[in-house]
Length: 118
Image (cartoon, rainbow, N blue to C red; front, side, top):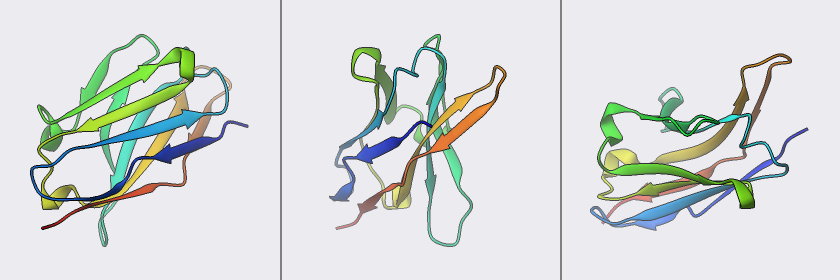
């Protein structure tokens, strides 16, 4: 069983920055695709960014150029650097770990609130 613990959320003004962290309980980053998702009130959960075990990344169009996903395998931690934050970025952000090779495994963190408001 993998546990994911997010941190770094909070209240920030528009145009500000935050860095989210997701610490995994084991050395999984070398075989799991790690992702950040978000869910705003009344909306479906959506992919924000993800990074594969090989280091490839992809982003939602709405955050390209503003957010950066990265990882530190030595610390079993994935980061989401969020710059130029907008009110529409307000959501609960969740960390996800997905192993596509058999046996399939998928884990979620508990979420961290990000609020962008003046």
